[in-house]
Length: 291
Length: 293
Image (cartoon, rainbow over all chains, first blue to last red; front, side):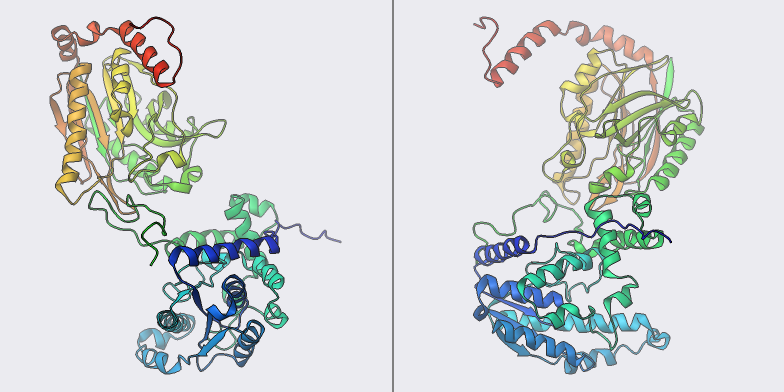
């Protein structure tokens, strides 16, 4: 009998403590910006559900607007799960169908890439949807006088598995330092409905899409690999010696490097003595920046 | 006696050791064709400058064969090149290696790490603790190595001159503070004035090699140059563009300059040390050892 393979560990988390820290963070953001309300896009998935629970706990459900933004191919289960969150929290909600906004753009995308068809076009269509949702959420943020809460997690951010100026757009990122597997324990701690915790994660950008299917690896293996490479600063060889597949580790390592651009402000061509981001450096919130 | 110095004003690739080894080898080969006795490459020529958390990924030990091999092109040619050094106890330094015939004949760890304005070096590397010179034999004699910001502290080149340096070699990766304006050109002029002054006061020739290229929005300005012991310019590379420039130093000039202007011989080192001791004690709020009336 072969011994079970010993893999590098998953990142741990103390869920109750993490919840306290994040709620303190959200309240500080509100205080520092001078906002009282928050808005977020609620998909029915575990990430946005967790952020909704955190925001409701931080500022009260009356100060939270959750916007549901289905596209014509979005699954009914997503809508059902989103409504479970609304019911559980008692926060305000709006439903904005993005289909009539997205279709004209998609109809313009009949270029040679479409003839080639396949994944690339799916990704481009998905990006259009994610960016349309961003436009809706930012419009609702102005109408509801609210800050936009981000719903990207650490696994996504490191792998660049998200749409720049789409779902990655936000005023602050409450779960941006939680790996997907850690996030599930935090969600459970908050009381996010079981149905949402148990279903396979999906961006729901086309029928049958799942994160793990698209990434080609399980979140369990991705998080073990990222935790080893990033947090523990292991070399690729050490990850492999630790039991992870070399192809996986090399793929993750390359992807983290390739997607660096999604995690940073664009570089500025320095010309003057004080350049924003280079030598004009201030806290985001400081005296005078509160509205 | 005369000897030739080549300054390789190259544009290293950020974080790409293999590409930079190739760039450096190519520059050394071109300098060899020019008959250079010493080839100088910029600060961090093997790694690129704005490394941040790439530091441990590109760091090399001082005896790394990839570095030593750079000194083998021509057995009697000296090569000065910048790299990230990892010490045995895992400190990371911004170092300049002096190589000849596959041997490390000198090493300087950047003493002053700029951590202000657009610079953040002190966050990623640790400062060197030695200011020394390295005897390399005739015709050059004794070399004082330094790295970029080290030259903004007059004590360092002056100490090397007093320590017997017959040539100061500064390896730089100077990003322009304002490349789009007269303020940027003024800052570059400041660098050059400072070098002219060190050559004059140290009565010592200077080889300054600054990189070019662009990293993360920063533009490196080049302007590498060789100065004679009287502070005059021997050769100067263009601003902004890659170049390999070669200049000749005559050791008789150094000898006669020091006879004509015996500044180093006249230096009051004991007096300087006494006053430094007093200043150090006063700045630290310590009681003074003697009456300082």
